[in-house]
Amino acid sequence: MKIAMVSEHASPLAELGGTDAGGQNVHVAALSATLARRGHDVVVYTRDDGSRAQRTVHTADGYRVVHVPAGPRRPIPKDEILPHLGDFAVFLREAWARERPDVVHAHFWMSGMASELAAHGTEIPVVVTFHALGTVKHRYQGRADTSPPARLRIERLVAARSARIIATCSDEVGELSRMGVPPRQVSIVPCGVDLDLFAPDGPVAEQGAAHRILSVGRMVRRKGYDLAVAALPHLPDTELVIAGGDEAAHEGYSEAQRLQDCAERRGVADRVHLLGPVPHTAMPELIRSADVVTCTPWYEPFGIVPLESMGCARPVVATAVGGMRDTIVDGVTGALVPPGSPAALADAIRPLLDRPALAKTRGAAGRRRAENTYAWDRVATRTLAAYRKVSARRVDRAALSA
Image (tube, rainbow, N blue to C red):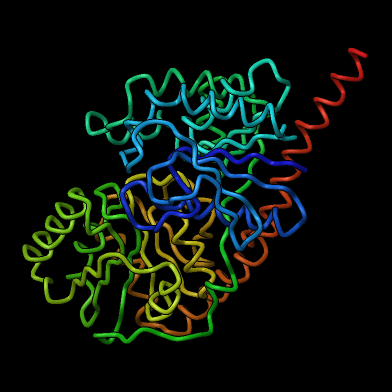
């Protein structure tokens, strides 16, 4: 099958941890690599931000990355890409006229817009994974939402015109239904995790206290690291390590300073350690050094860190939001707590620190769940099933019109 992946701002070649580089980049890279290993011809189209000299990169994982000229040839925030999507779509249309894909898989609403413009009138089916919905982001961020004003309207059009939507969790299906998308048009396929890299055995980073709590992700306010900082006074002999962020990002600097101020006010500054960006390949040994991994955002469309932690057989305590309500089984692989409650977070963490056998049991259950549900081979199988639904529908339409 010829598969065109479109990921306008999230290149599979990007370094992780920046403001606009995170779970979507990992998802596109790993899914493309897994599909390529199965013999499919995969091409990823992403905006040319000047980070690579070559227009086309042939990756060691067997898929190609094409850098699309659209907008300035330098990094820009994803919220500034919308005016350049017309050029992006023209490039796609010309590329697909030369090499027609069997299916297009667009990642994020702007990729969906560009893909549907490019495929209009061609009968090329466009499948969309939103990764995050503007309705949810605006609900939680309000005036702090920097998305283009047209996002909500365009997102509804993209959803209505797509051949199929791949949602990453059940929470997203409900949100799409409220947008008018019939559930029959949606397949649920979660994100995946590299279980060879994120494994229980391997090097372990050194701890600086009797117990360690770890939080990982981009250094942005919605990740809710301050909730873990606020829980720390209730957890003696415990350090909180926060890994992630982009040293070049102003937002990352300001959020790091805010967390340090929060730690000072709580009297735990000596037990809060901000590591800054950590290479993806070094993350497993850091996760293995933790007694508990906490994921405490206000909202989270899916959340890759819980999967990586489960792969390393570490229990996860997370806020009961978004995709984490699917990935974490409360009382089995970890615990779910209400957002915004440091006391509830501390109460969920304490038994895992006090009873190492309990933490080990829940970590092992998390590893089994990751193997059974979130291994990339399983994710790829479910993704291909969604592709085949739209491909079969196109064949049926062609037969009827013959």
